[in-house]
Length: 89
Image 1 (cartoon, rainbow, N blue to C red):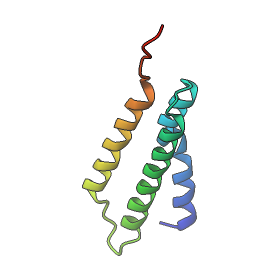
Image 2: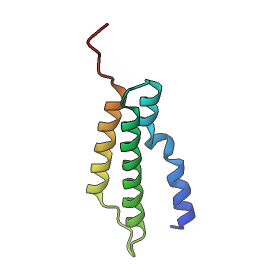
Image 3: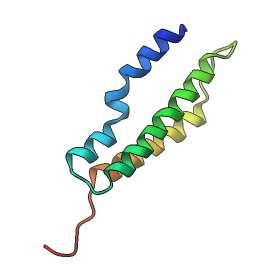
Image 4: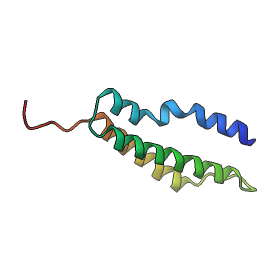
């Protein structure tokens, strides 16, 4: 796959992949910066995993790596969607 096409496809995935950050920002979470940092790390890991797999002579996406990234993304999405309740009302 051409590098430019891959980069454009990867950039087009941003609204879905960065969803935990959007949730945290709209919820005005105190953990928004932490969630955004981890979300960008996951997005970079996904980019490197898929780019490395597609750059091989025989394209083969490593399933275990993608499953780990997906599970980490789902856990991050859960933490972004929920906010800890404070003790005082």
